[in-house]
Image 1 (tube, one colour):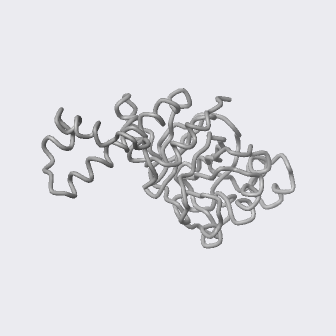
Image 2 (cartoon, rainbow, N blue to C red; image 1 turned 90 degrees about the horizontal axis):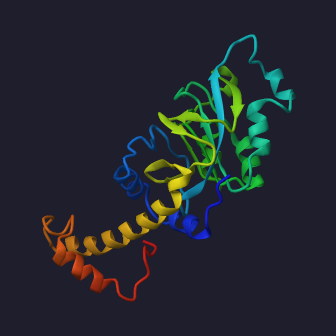
Length: 242
């Protein structure tokens, strides 16, 4: 597993997914934003952590009945029970929102275990209760039916698709009010650094635009604007909290 520096984690907790998708785009990566998911609650900072994955296929009536949950090796329950602290559980539901991919009890267990968050391109039951928890949960929306109505859990910690995006175990997952972005693990450190620099520059450019500056020569900045930025940034920290 890739180990990420505390500086990387701290920066990713402060920058937006909009900035991160721009940095990924500059590196030729255009399909890293998970489509169709949104936060169930309001969280004080970004959700950040390496991916721990669960893959589902469509359920089948003779296999998916409530009795399967008595087996501690059931992949959904095993994924929750064994999710490493600090990781984000990412669930592949094939974008099918006809059933939940989890509920309040499972999310509570993940919170107690120290998970960094949950992302699912399926639904969640007990959505209001989950939204009040301090565990960041992103999904395609509320859905009352239990997972067995549509999903058959098969694999843990394998490459999956979530919201049309490939997610490999250990990829860095970042979520904010806009949604969730997936950063390849080997790029996370440099993207976190460059995203912090980008937001520091954009904070300065925003002050210019608020003061009446026109977009040409400001956004993107010309040489004169960049020189003014270098003067402005003296004595300031990179990417302060907004």
